[in-house]
Image (tube, rainbow, N blue to C red; front, side, top):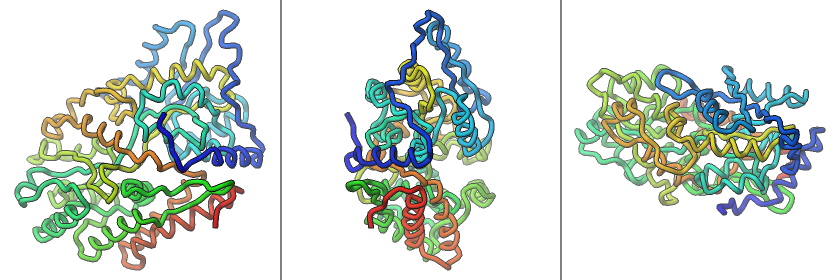
Length: 437
């Protein structure tokens, strides 16, 4: 069994203690209900935010197939069309009212706080039956200490996207180390190009993922206390790298979700990008029908100092919610659903389940015939398995503000990680959780 060695049972004890503070009791995996003892089919409700656009296999269609094959365990899938944060609020309200779903899509960074609030069940005994179906790094995202609250669905390992034609024209190869990326940045900048973009609006997940890729672990426990280390050696390497590029004006400093990023992609000045694997589904859409269509490729993240390792930037799993009457049956469906890899891949997901996945035609066209999902699958396997999130991680969005200041020259990149450290400690303390000095 893959484990998260520094994240021990203590975290679970601390989390359960916090549950009492919230006035909510977490259900255990032993609450199995009568499992349809009356002979009638049982119904499991599943709330999700999965896309269902053109060419995609919608979740409803996948669930219909399950229902046809499993008449005794019927699943009712409901799509939530709002924001992830709004869905979390709905879950909290519904569960407190006693009418929440049995299963729900939850982001990995949301899991610890939902568990602390008593909204998730510990289904470790059931989850361990299916652990070998998923990558170790993704499976760890559904853990809080020794508790396991569900199964992973998709991942967001950091990878490197680059325009192969532009790199060849500049005499560059895809970078395999941070030194390579530094040298490529200088060579490209001299030609008016950028092989990276520094994106302050993504700092929280993007830079924490790079710290993970550099081998750091931000959250662990010692005795009965949380330990926070967002300014470790890996973070220092990441900070020095980006500070050098900002100082030398060798990276495009722009918001990821602003017009500047897409404009630079379209005019050919941005020819490389450290990004999340899930971006492969839409990153190159604006280049369709242009001379740049088919020129881009995806590669593993350059070595940030810890070898062939990537870090998480997004991704989600399917958690078993408090009040689920049939957790064993819910987990049976959970595993089946999340191993329908080609169906999920059609939605643009980088699936957490092991196994070969067929790269959709759109990706093949946009990436010049490259087997993109095979490359992204390797990145998923390379995820740092020792990078759990802590309750209150959402407050680390303050990193984005400091990152914007670093772009403006009123802060340093190292200050972003100081913000992460200070904010994480304060957030844990605000939740009533003990933190080591």
